[in-house]
Image 1 (cartoon, rainbow, N blue to C red):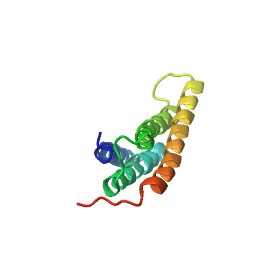
Image 2: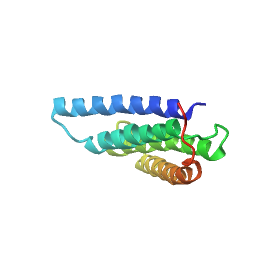
Image 3: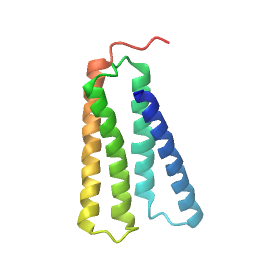
Image 4: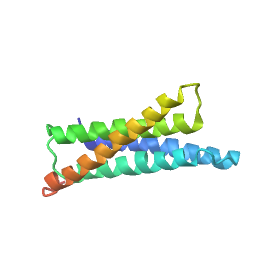
Length: 132
């Protein structure tokens, strides 16, 4: 799996969703989903793009368990946090509030773990730059 490509493509999807939500809010004059919009752009677009840039710039073995765990927690955490925040704040479906709150918290916790793993990645694999 090419970590940089997977994260780059997902960040592009987040950018599109974030831009769409921003234009929808501006057109409707209703800014109720502003926190969801902001987190989609910051967590989804910017963070995943930064992670993608890291994997593109440095030599990280594709077999690295740390890298695999980091990429999957980044993906699951960004989806979990932003979807959980949307479910909890917007309430588009009649789901129990406890479920949406736990979904939101678990997603955020997985994302926090991803950022912690990224710190470890930068100390372990930031010596060897890719030569292209």
